[in-house]
Structure formats: C-alpha cells, structure tokens
Amino acid sequence: MTANGYGEKFFFMSFGESHGKCIGAVVDGCPAGLYLTEQDVQKELDLRKPGTSIVTTQRREEDKVEILSGVFNNFTTGAPIAMMIRNSDKDPSTYEEIRTKPRPGHADFTARVKYGGYNDWRGGGRFSGRITASFVMAGAVAKKLLNETLGIEIIAFTKELGGIRINEVNLEEARTNRYTNEVRCPDKDTAEEMKKRIVQTRGEGDSLGGIIECIVLNLPVGIGEPVFSSIDSEIAKMMLSIPAAKGVEFGRGFEAARIKGSENNDEFYVDNGIIRTKTNNSGGVLGGLSNGMPFIFRVAFKPAASIAATQRTIDIETNEAVELRVAGRHDPSVVPRAVPVVENATAIVLADLALRAGFIPPVLKGKGKE
Image (tube, rainbow, N blue to C red; front, side):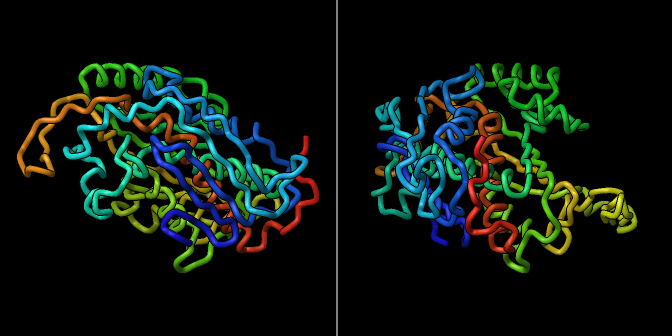
C-alpha cells in the first residue's frame, strides 16, 4: 500500500490532478475471466460526472473512460487494468489568485508547505474532488466482480443535506429512486426540498454539507481481517480518503453511546436454517467481521470549501491579511456527486477483503458476460 494506493489483493492506485492532462486508476489483482467493457465503467462515471445539474459544478467534462490495459476480448486477463479520463474543460486562470492566497477550509496552504510550492495548485490539483473519478473507475471493476461472484449489491444515497433529513428509508425505494433526482435522495418530496436549499445557498455564495448512507447486501459471514484490517476499519480509512469526508459511523453509530447494552445488542435467531439477528444495531459487523446482515454505515461530508462569499485569508508571500472571493466553477454541495463515489469506494474495499479471505478465486471462467 502506498500513499496514493489502497489494498493488498485488489490493489488500486489513483493518479492525476484536477487540471492536469488526465485522471486515472490502475487496478492490480483483479482475477482473470471477468467480462468487462468500457461501458461497465462508463455507467458509473456518468453518475458522478460534473456539469449535469444546477446543484453541481458547471465544469463540463465528458469523462469518457479509456481502458488501456488488462482487458483482452472484453475479459480481464489478470494483468494490471489501467484506465483514464482526459481533462478537457480546464480554466486554471481562475485559480491564479489562490496560488498565494489559500482558500479557508481547503488544502491550498498545507499542500504548499508540505511540497515546498511545487504542488499543482490549479483547481486544487491532487487535493481536488475531481480525483474521485479514479475511485469510481476502480470501483466499477470491483463492483462488477463482487456482484458476479458473490451477488453483493451496494446501495448508497443522500440521507441528509443542508439539515434536511430522511429518517425512514425503504430499501426498494433507495434501490430504484436514488439516481432519479439531482440530489440522489430516494424520497421524491425530500429530494425537492434539498434541491431548493442548495439553489438558495448557492445564490448566497455559500455551500452545504450532508450525510450519505450506504447499505451492502448479501455479504457472506467473515469478510474482514481483524485487528487492523477489520471490515469497519478498512471502510473508515477508505471513506475518510474521499475529499470533504469528515466522519463515519456504523449501524446505530454514535447513538449507541447513549443507550444500554440490552438495547444495543442484536439477539440471534434461526431463519430457515440461517442464523440472523432480530435487529441490526451493529450495522452488520461483529468483531470487525461481516455477520451476514446488511452492512450499513454513514459518511458525513463538510460543506465545500470553495465558496463565492467573501472570506478572510493571508497572502503567503507578504503575510498580509486579505479578502478572497473564490472564482471558478464549484459544487455548492459535494454530497450528490459523492453518492456514486461512496458506492464504488466501498466496492474497492470489499473486493480486496473478499480476495484476501478466499471468497473469490483467481480465475473466474468468463463471469459477467451477458
């Protein structure tokens, strides 16, 4: 594992910058014999593509994926799978000011200090949310691998945005409706409220945060490698690697700290010969291992740092206090476009853990061909 890579058996490396030539991913360790086309990856990328809605950045990128290696005659070969999308709608001139005037809440200052000013500051460079396209490319491979071999399904959706929240979630509605609206909320009425809040806040030159919930179905018992590679610790590491992610909770989460053990414990029972639990306060995890129940977690995202409202900062070259209004094209909330990122990032972790535990063989004999 490296600073720009994740995994042991299913290894993913991310490369590229916001306004560089391209964004890319390399996946090493995908078993041979998985039927995989560029369209499999493209359909996931299209879900996070910019410039498709009033609630996202107006930067327009085609984000057309190119698979460069590791696939032959539409089957994975077992060799590294290299993929990339090209950056075409670039306008680095709008970022000239932040080269010396770091945005409050962004990595401009820390990156400049750590890399001695040699970092690519255009659009945040390596610290831009645009790098999550690489998570989606690798995750598209992982998601198909998990589905075709183990029947695993990953469903993420917007749980809360700008203080507007859905409490009860119908699984079938989440599966069917989450991508039918711009904010990726499965409840139509709540989605409309969220959209109005985003549009209003964008008009004020500000941004909003929110919470994404993710539900994983059909995980076998025993996914995870305790102690330091447990399923929840690995997911937490991956989720907090997504730009703007600030917190992760599993199952009942922080609420469990306020109740008794008798209220929090999930009692076992047998259903048609299968051991299940009556409740799922643990979120499908016991001792760092999947327990066969739905794996449920939530990720909190802060408001986007790049806002049009006037803020105070420092000119690094003069050490003088200055005012800053961030120009350019930015998401008023990262949450809607982060939903597919959470899904695909989850798939990367689970594919790695499933391979490590021996749930997936090294050769698949043509899995996934339609």
